[in-house]
Image (tube, one colour):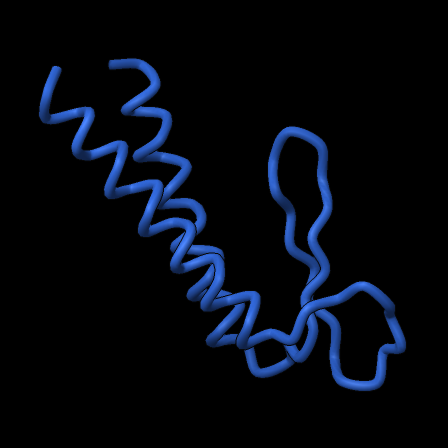
Length: 80
């Protein structure tokens, strides 16, 4: 039960971050970082950072990952 609730919260967080990356007009490239929590940093075009992902790819990827997390967490939440 605990892990299902944690998965629902984490999946929702991925979806909210994905939408914020997609709707931010200044977010041309995205860098991921952090320790236990995934942090996103948006950069404008021409920032010259290596290892960054394009904003659209990162946003859609976060939406897909968040949706999968929500799907499996919700399925396990309904069983318990």
